[in-house]
Image (cartoon, rainbow, N blue to C red; front, side, top):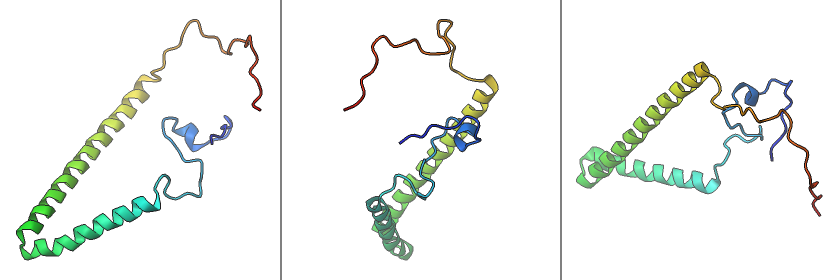
Length: 121
């Protein structure tokens, strides 16, 4: 469901046109299901169940912990690099202006329709 934004109203979407903002202001965590959150909680419980064995020196627990920490550090490095490149892109596009070329053949209004659209039944 998309709402038409009043151009006179200062809205978050008008301030940041490239960002997607949820229309539902009551929703705290959009697009997360209860099943997904329970899976995340279960994975975290498994990690924290293995961690005491790694502290005690068990080889299998150390291997699992090192693997998880390595994967997490690589994911965080990728996220940091993405944020840096995204920020540089925002700055560069702000300096250059809009990337959308204007057509010399385009008019300000769409042409009239030859066949009027039918109303939905």
